[in-house]
Amino acid sequence: WPIGEMLEIREDRLLRVVRQVLGSQVRQLKAAPVKDDDDIKRPFWKSGKPPEGVPVAAFPRWLVCTQCRLLAPIRSGLFEFKYDQVRPERSRFIHKNCPRLPNPPAIPARFLLACENGHLDDFPWHEYLHGTIPCSGPLELRDVGASGEAADIMLFCRACNKMKPMAPAFSEEGKASMPLCRGWHPHLRVAAPEPCIRQPRPIGLGATNMWFGN
Image (cartoon, rainbow, N blue to C red; front, side):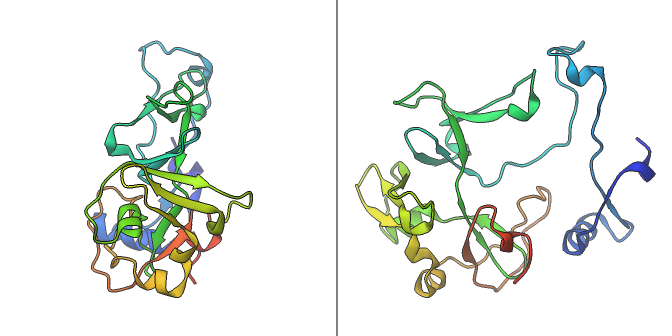
């Protein structure tokens, strides 16, 4: 693919991190090319495998079942990635053993941690609900209202039955109780964590300030 025909990604902070990892010789970031040929339109490819794409890392790493509302990390093994050969954009995670429906889709957990230095991390679900109590029971993220805001979302533990609303996480006291920033850039899988002294705070998935610094 001709380099000159690829769109440039203008993101100074991302370019700075890439240079830290790969070296100062990196001058620009380019968008991945989109392959548009007959192979993409066929339900099965000659090799029996889908064409190679750009490797990505799943983030957030916690998912929620759309039916039973189970909240768990991908590494738990409770969710399975289903690749759709006919429509790759419909590939998704499913909850394999959902008690309500067979193989319902799982969606990313809607809350993250972010700091002013541009680091992102998973929300500390167990720590937020249990504090220092050593309980690692299955969690649920329940909607108790129609607004979709933090005030209408409840975190629940199936093991000890403890329940806590998500709204306090966004209060000043809740923000101050978050763990220290680990300096992660989850979209850069090979990048080592950076030293960071900022206090991260909760943020909604897809919120504008996830992409633009405050």
